[in-house]
Each structure stands twice: as structure tokens, then as C-alpha cells.
Amino acid sequence: MEYLKSFSLPGEGWELGFLAENRENKRTCYGSRYPFGLFLNREVPTLEFEPVTIFCGGNGSGKTTLLNLIGEKLSLNRSAVFNRSSFFGEYLNGCWAETSYTFTAQVREASRVITSDDVFDYLLDFRCMNEGIDHRRRELLEEYTDARYADFQLRSLEDVDRLRQVVEAKRKTGSRYVRDRLMKDVPGKSNGESAFLYFTREIKEGGLYLLDEPENSLAPHLQEELLQFLEDSVRFYRCQFVISTHSPFLLSMKGARIYDLDSRPVEVRPWTELEHVQAYYRLFESKREEFQKE
Image (cartoon, rainbow, N blue to C red; front, side, top):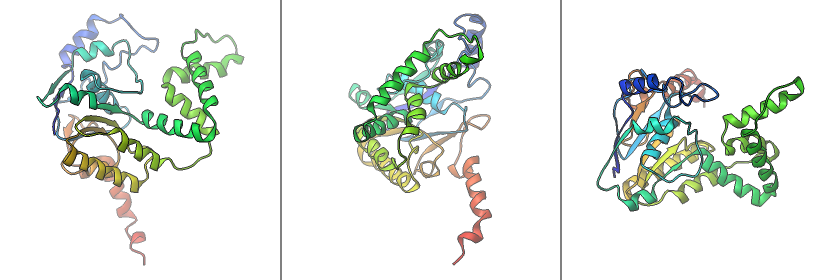
């Protein structure tokens, strides 16, 4: 099923014109006009979608940003917050999405954006109930809110720790801030089975799902199970998926259209030609004799 047919980013001329007209307007404290400039000179074509479409690329390539733009353009449901800068709305106005007649109000209601923060919150809620750390989580969320919106100035070396806390809070979502701090207090154990069950619970029949690195927390055998679940959801339950991932298992999905965001221009590639998949291949080839030992 194809609910989303195509998506276009603002043209280079439009983006440069906007930046020129707003050279000083709404500049953030970090001097960023995100997402303006992220895809400039990257030669990103109009993105055409199949029942499964995958964005693959290194850190900073824009995989998550594309999912956020698509999700907001289509007004899809989501739980986790994201980096919606003061320029995000203007940039979104320059984007264009084409949907099919099958993208009804009912389908839109069933559709959603699912991020690693959503999975983490689910796991953390489960752990909080079982390990009695809910109080600590609330404390950290309060600490995050206080630090993120603090009117802080560095006056002496004694303020350095507070400065680090403020900077960390401003750079992270609340979920990420809590995870990085709270997980140090939680005994380590596998969350993979619970994470996999989260996807099987949230992905329902007849929906468009944007999945941001769903392989996080999943061991290889669970990534294989997720692959099978997603393929079955497309084949039997009229779902469409747009996925950002580095997982070779998910990249090998049957019929997937894969955009290599590291290439210039951005183009569709077979999963076996992606650089990071080639890196795995070279590693295993170099260790071939070790695999063939009896």
C-alpha cells in the first residue's frame, strides 16, 4: 500500500532567498537556522516512495530530519518531542508532499512517527513499575526542565558543573536526558524483547509509519524478527513504512527503496552498495578463515 507517494524539500533558490531575507531575523542562541542549510547543495531529488522506503546515511546526513518533516507535513501522530527550531515552520512551508486517495482520515489517525525515545519511554515505564525508580525519573525530569530554561551565566569556576548541566539539557530531549542519567542507576539487562513487543503493539493495520532507527535495543535475531514483522505488515495488513536505519537486516527488506543520503547527489542504491554495508562485508571477508574453522 502506498499512502505517501512523494515528498520534496524546498528548492535551492527558495532556501537561499529566505536566508537572504532573514539574515538576522530569529537567530537562535547557537546561531543556527536549522533545518535551513542542512540539505543545501546536497542535490536531494523529489523523494518517491514505495511500500517500504529507507533513508540511510551517516550522522548528520538528515535521516531523522526528513522523517520529522514528513511527519509534520502530514500531521501524523507522535509522542516524543523533536528539535523544532524557530525556523522549522518556515522550512516546512517550502516542502511539498503528495499522498494517494487511499490516505484517508482513518489512515491518518492510525499512522504515526515512532522514535527511539518512544521505545525508551515504554521500557522505562516498565522498569519503573518493576524496580521502583519512578521517583528518581520525576526528579530528573524536573532537573531537566529547570536546567533547560535556566537564565544562567558563568561567574566563576564553581559554576562549571551547572554550566555543563544547562548545556546538556539544551542539547537533548527530556527522554534522552533522563535516559543518559537514569540508566546509570538501573541494573543492566536486555530490553530487546520488550522493545520488539512495543513495535508489534503500536503498528496496526492500515497505517503509514515513520520509524527512526527501530533497530536500537534489538539484538540481531530480534532485528530479523522485526524484519519479518514489517514485511508481513506490508504484505497482509496494508501498511506503508518510511524508515531511517543502519541495520543490514532492515536494509535487506524485500522491495525496499533505499535513499543513500551520503551520496552526492542523493540517489537510490541497492543495499549491498551502501558504504557501511560494504564495510561489514570487508570485515567478514577479512575474517573468512576464522568463520571456516571446523
